Length: 148
Length: 338
Image (cartoon, rainbow over all chains, first blue to last red):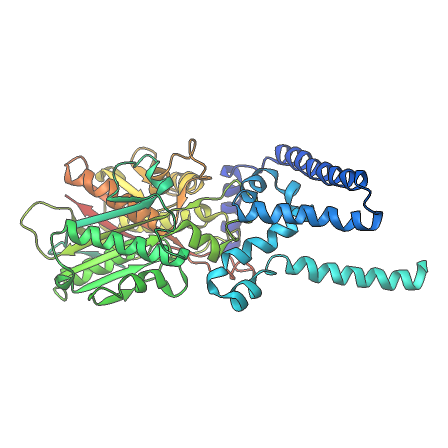
């Protein structure tokens, strides 16, 4: 009991001296950078339209272009420097997903193509895929029962 | 033989001499307040090696070589090398010695491993079991990030409490004798494992400050001394938050003001305002390099006479916080006198 009280007192002290996360600054930066990425996607879409690309193909080209760009910037060692400031702004769009796959693949390159790159490239993106699939399945059931 | 003067505190009768030291660092470390004081700075963070792990091995091998050269001895004259690092199974340390013909004992107390190595090495030399012992500790920013956090190229935002793992290594050679005046290890203390329930791995300073205070408090009590009896009380890698917490604990529990006499290696290695290093340095190489690059030379010049060096280590693994474990910490210390 006395132990727990000491721990609580100490953790209160830790809170007092620790710097706070600058939420306002981070939210604004995430909003601006995330918005710029979306604007870039829209720009690519407009170029597609100008070249007479079909609606169906445009939907494939835009995310592919953003994924490619994020992967190249990750490989060049630039993405992490942007992400450090942009936070959710670069992590939430599809650019974050690309970065989360390329970064561990690069990190584990020297452990071999199969057990290094192959085994580790979905280490961070894996949860997104697992829960994304789970939620989609759940939505499928709801759609089947109520919305069809 | 050393004498036990209180629980886990030993006083050496024939204090082992630090006859040579070496400190190496990476680019950022070489741009900090200790610029120009390292034996060698590596601008290439891979040190010409293909992997981060091999880079750390090369870092450690360089520190050992500089220490042995500075001590004017050869590898064959070293009876035992005591070393540690933060990699799984201490690979940087073991691998650094595979081309050297030096008997090896690996130690692990996280970032307190270097202080632990000094305490154990001094005990063995003082007791007459060995005549010359080398001690080394290293860490590498990239290998530590890979093992404990995220891949380097991942675009994540650091928490405001985070510290930067130093790319650095420090090594010393301890001897039973010396013809010239050299710093000597006169006392050592082995620390308790202290856990105050800190669970966030980005709050290392907060996790380690209570262990540093426990060791300091016990040392002062056991040796019946005051902070003012020392020229400097040096902790390993508490950095900004841990330092504030240590001062607060000392003030609350013993009415001591440590502000003037205490310095932390994590705040000496980097300029936390000018350099992008979070709240300061951490990692095993931080305290090892600061002691070897800055403190021991200042002792040799006569500027510092009695330095109480307390290394601090957070005993977590990459998976223990995920399993809901809080972060225990340990602090080992040595008293170095000129």
